[in-house]
Length: 175
Ligand code: AMP
View 1 (cartoon, protein in one colour):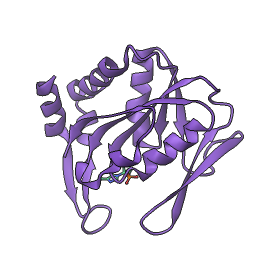
View 2 (tube, rainbow, N blue to C red):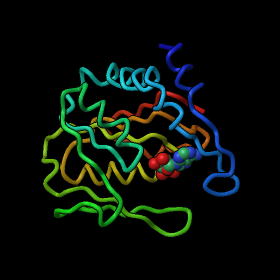
View 3 (cartoon, protein in one colour):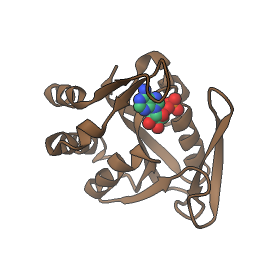
């Protein structure tokens, strides 16, 4: 609902020059501490995916966990974390990706998903798309990506263009 989307937008706070100069950080802590907004966000995502036969929600560390876990509960499916290196205790598979300077890596438990599992990936925000693209590549090694969902999309950064394939990309709020 349009009204709900505006409510979400109004609840997100801009922090100028965080974590470094020139970046406008979209702070979602003000959204999730509001019980009405947190519920709206979860329900809006649920409505979009309730008929997609999702088996697992895969959340990207760390803010992807916040939205992914209640969504998995509502969708009646499991939750699987994608984490930064050396955090997961069992055997992992990894995916490297490019940052502005250098590279980074994300990991998932090797036995967390299996061929044919239908996966929804969640994160709080789509910027350049590098993180989400790496998560798609990682999950695709072992299962099927059905969709990637964000609360926020920074459209100028064209991250969506990196997320092409046989899956859907959705965001609730666009700037
Ligand atoms: P990217 O890989 O460029 O799409 O960046 C996405 C990741 O970085 C997400 O996990 C976001 O949480 C974080 N991020 C990037 N830009 C911002 C921003 N302006 N405000 C808040 N988080 C951001």
